[in-house]
Every structure is written in structure tokens, then in C-alpha cells.
Image (tube, rainbow, N blue to C red; front, side, top):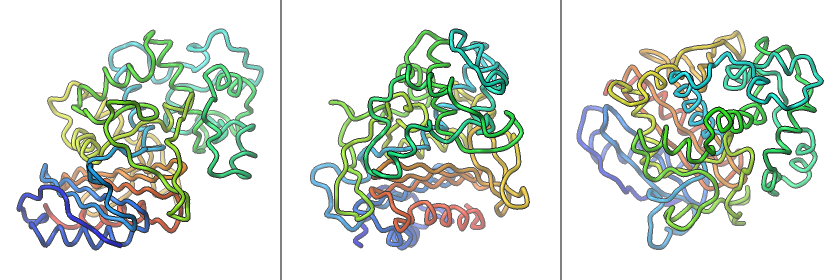
Length: 358
């Protein structure tokens, strides 16, 4: 795998010019994908390297292309939710049914689900609607979300049986986060894409972050590949699941986004940025791992690290940050396969840097 450094690196104790760049190059070489980008911010100093098994893209380098964020998009949606809650437009503990008043809900637990339950994956709703499961198993690279409109999403919710009482257990649910899309739209009278742009992306200066499939003017987009690393895939259209997985961004914007969480002070979203980092529940083996309103939180040297990963049919992403050292790591790759290792490599790099004073 070839790796080419491609961004500025300011000298500092833990980002020591060429030595630190080489450190990132070694980490990037562990990722098996046609296109790979690792980007690190430490106390505002940034280093970005790009590489991969495929040829260097013509024109725009890997580091300046937009990547599909998959489930990392959920953190944007929940930050939007937290901001609207701070503004009094809605409340985190509002029952979901209050925002969908015309929807018949025959299953009793459905009326107990709150917006907080959706955000924290404690609603009890299934991961995806039942009718999407068979297609995902039989045709793993066929996008079952494309064409899945809001009306169908709401029907799926109305017919879904919860796995447990809302708030009693953690169970990851794309369906749950997707429902925040129509809820936020109805509460504000504004479509999700415009709402996210005006209330999150623009205030945070995320100028190369957009919603939905690429359109003219978005700039070059990275191409995803099947698990073989050779077969290209079309851009992913998440349709009614956009709130759960339809955001795209360049690596630099992901660092800006993480830096806003590391230093919320003075931001127009300061209160919301702090709210989404407050622990909500414990989960995992021995209940050692914590979930905030939207981020996974793990113990690390000097204090906890927070992170989220995402994947579409042909791309994978990771974003994590460590408040104690002011460190953020973003990893992006154009291959959806366990052997890709972009998530495990990025997490390991962040954890390593947690114990390396900036």
C-alpha cells in the first residue's frame, strides 16, 4: 500500500513534523482499502496523511474528497436535536408519539418511546424495518434504503414491535435515529438537510459537509468499493434514513467538528456540544463502557475518549476525540469489509495518543 503525506503539520511535542507524519503513515499502511485518509488534531495542530491500494485519484487528492459517513451521521442528527432542545423547540423527553400525532400505534410500548430513547438506542426498536432484513442478507451490496420514503418509514415504526420496554436496555437502531428526521422536520417546519445546514454545519464552519447523494457543486466525492476492494459502488442514497446515515464530509471538516466538541466555549452551539457528551447509560461487558447522548465513551489514560464509527455499502469512517489531551482522530476508507481495519486502526491510534501528552 502506498501512503503519501498531504497536509500541514505544525511542530509540537506530540506532532513532531516528519517523525509524527511517519507515525501516521505506518498506521495508514495497516488499512486495506483503495483510498485511506488518517487525520489527527492535537491542541489545534493538524496532520493528515492519505494513501491506499488504489491509484492516486486524478485532480483532487484523497484528503480533499468527500466521504460517506454512514452512522457517524447520527452524531450530527443528535447534536441538532440537542440544539433544538436547548432552544425550547422540543424536549429530549418528549414522547415520540406527540410529534407523530396522526400515526396509529397499536403496540403499547410505542407510546412510551421518547426522543432521548431514540438518540441513545434505548427505544427497543429493531435495527432496521423487518422488510429490509432479507434483502440485506441476500444482496448485501444492494441499497435497500434508496426509495424508502418517509411515509414508509412511519408505517414501519407503526408496525414494529419493540424488543424491550423503552429505556430498559441498549439496542442499536437505525430505525430509531431515522425517526428523528421527520420529528425534527415537523417540529420546525423545515426539511432535515436545510435544518442541519443552518443549525449545525454553518455555525460550526463545516463548509464541505453536505447531506444526501453528491450533487453538482459539492466537490469531488470518494468512490466506495465492495469487500473485494476492486468493484466500485454508486453513491449511497439513504432516503428516509438520511438522519441515520446520509451525511458526507471531507476529512478536514471532521477534524473541525471534533475540535468543536473538544473546545465548545464560544461556539453558537456551546450548550448543545456539551450536552451530547454527558454520560447517559452504561453498557457492554461488565458495564464498563458508557454511552452519552450520541457518542460511545471508553476509559483511556488521563480521562475518557469519545468516538463513533460508520459505514455505507462501500465506505467506512471513524471519528474520536480525547478531551484530556485535546486530541482528535478521523479515519476514512473506501472499502466496507472487516479486513479494511480503518476503525480498529483509528481507535488504536487515538488510544495511543491519549497516553502521549500533547
